[in-house]
Length: 402
Image (cartoon, rainbow, N blue to C red):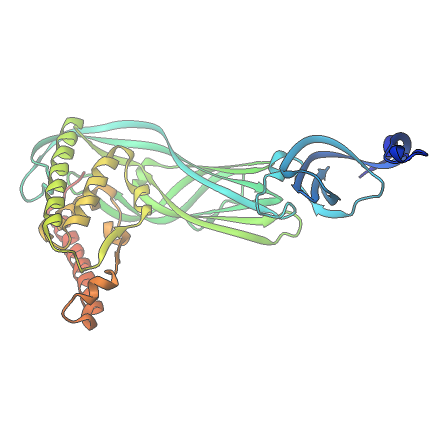
């Protein structure tokens, strides 16, 4: 609330002569003084707009003339002849004036961030596996040493808030306490027994901690390695602290990797160099073909959250091979898809992240029968999906692991 104070004010004090008509002087006057936690000034040449926050209340006003641009000051006293109208609530901290295009009185929950933090990894078993022609996939042959590793992981979720409380829902289970354990059903995969591993539906257990700060909500999730590798949905709901009304919801999904198969790094590097050569050969083959009239293939960026950090280079090359070979070399395409499925360890495999883009109009016009283009695209899409399904069956019969 403003305080009525007597302050020095510079006013117009014209003298008797024309050259003294623009004189000013200082007089003591009563004014309403505000102690603003922050004051934002925006100049529009002929008009200056002010927004100030005092102990959680927002005040705005305009004055003639001024500069150009926006300026921010903290802990400012401004005194007015008249009281200002209350323009609503505001946040006295720095985040209060950094609202961008949002109203400074509106709640928000933004900058939703998520990351996986490794805690510890324990090697529980070692061995050697012989890759043969039937189970090798691409660029893997001979005896490969492996390590079975159990991994404890922590997932950190966070969101910046203002005038909001955050409700978190993980795996369909609301996090109702500051800390606890939630359980939910999930499809879990394990890379062992070598080489194909196994999958099962089971109830997983996740320990959590919720930390609520003035302008941030953070959640930590901890896995049980016995649950293996699985993905789960995450929902963040923003609730207005004043009215209790929801104003924003965000969804995502993430995964835990509680068990991995780690092959000899030297073998992995040899495989990577071999895959690069295969990719280069496929690229040269595509370059020599006429302009393609079939649809293009692309993959959702969401695929990357299921790729282990140490396998990202291998996954990137396999994706390139898939893009370059699906129209011209189905054997290589199927082997690369199966290898990427094993690398991610997800039900449905890479096919769930695959999309087709239609050919350009001019390419369709060059075909003998433009009216059949969409039928060809549909047939090709169905054929690729069937091929991946068959590859999955073959992979289970002749399993392999990255």
